[in-house]
Length: 41
Image (cartoon, rainbow, N blue to C red):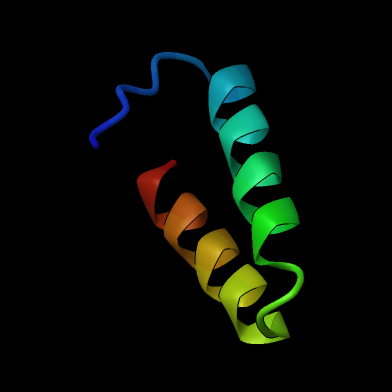
């Protein structure tokens, strides 16, 4: 499901949620999420 991000605060909240859910997988997920967020910004 697509999510429209309209503010940096909303993006930050979304990234934090994704990273907290990915903790049980591997550290690589967190690195990829941060890379993608940087690209979006």
